[in-house]
Length: 414
Image (cartoon, rainbow, N blue to C red; front, side):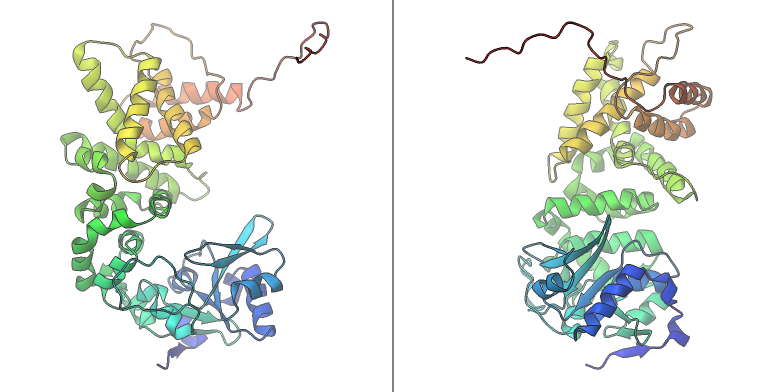
């Protein structure tokens, strides 16, 4: 198959919009006799006039050959072997052109059969992600019709959608991700296949699915994404507790928090909301409902210990079905949730002084309270008071006291 090649006069991609480190890797690979192109999301984003988050490279060089050329590279993955070329904290992902059986509907467990650029593209998910960019000739190389699909804002699977979703169910999440982010129209065959294959998502590696979900929370398009996930039945497969809550009259609170988070993430020069804050957008409305049912409706007042207990139960209920939240993210999220009831306690004391707790990362609680203050009436003044008090205390933890006691002899060990 001969690809369609688009010159700079048509595609309009400027070389100075590409990460210099990615250009360095491409040049070194080509100088060493290998074929190498920019690939995937970065090419798509450049064509959409958006700033790419990552610049991935595909090459004819094998992983060990990439490692030999770039001493800073580390080889990762068993199912999909590739290289991470490091420049300090910056990482460029470099993969080898793949081949293999794309007609088999079985879940792909290993993907380390090397191939040609054409074979590699045919293994990718959607046509908009199946484009190469050759910086030497400044050409976009298109084997699958991805370039016109981007122009038409059309999302189409490479190959038969039913087979492709069976091979890698995470593609279903990515389909809805691109629809939410870019507003593309989804091909009818892909949409029907997504509904048919939705139960396949539980066969995916939980860590991959979790990362896709967390990235969408960070994308500024989470409201649209979770709405699409719910409408297509994927939320019920992955997060049934949240899916059930979304069907209740209180479910719109989750969407309201996601919308506020999206607005914050889209504001220029605004600090990025951290993952515990974004995760709290999903679970805080459920926690409020839990506390109402188990305490308030029974005329009981929950204390911080009760709230800690309910928060842990809720995190288990929401996330036990499919993926487990990493321990540190879970701890930080629960800490944030509990701190909301330090800021707005159930038992309000008259003329109570604001005391900022000296606990790690209380700034996350303030970040989330910013979102709450936009949704709950009468919170603006309280937000100003807590923000002012927090800024006075600062983010540093209290210094450890230096003991002035006499030095004791170390205990002897028997």
